[in-house]
Length: 213
Image (cartoon, rainbow, N blue to C red; front, side, top):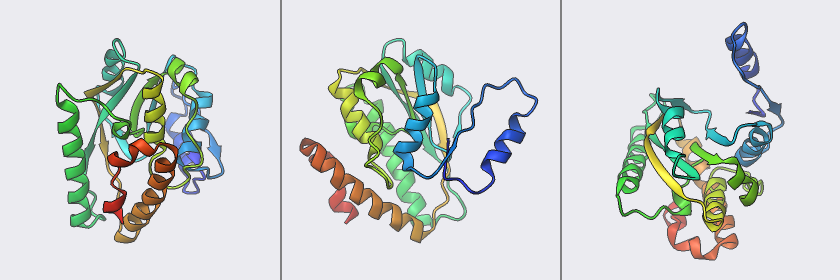
């Protein structure tokens, strides 16, 4: 799904799959945000399991197989996200990201962990289609950065979904960010967390909006 892309991605993708036996649907639309992009992909997906990936991740070799294995005993599967530093990203920001994903992995590997809505990241997430039909689509009122996946996580858990973590379902996350871009993301995530708090007041204690401020 190319959500308002103007950088030649459609042409590059078309050239990459030309002449190959690849079942790839390239969908272009005006910018609707992350929730709108994911809903567009969901509308066109035909499988019984839907795997969502962000455009700034590189799949590991066992990604699909690991998601499939975990779905034998789960309704939704969280994959592992491993950060890869980009030269353009200031070191202090890169260290924050590395620490965040390292701590997330360690917490989810705890055998006694209870997965929360705020553990659900749609950058590497697979869900059985029947659960998505019950929980509904991504909420497109989340137009900026962040929280549309936590909102989905809340609704999946409310539907009784069994959510598992599969560390072998690995992607490498490389997102070059300048200081200005990072600050814009933080501002947008604060706004998104405010929307989430108003929808689900009990989630407030799980959010870091005070830290973002």
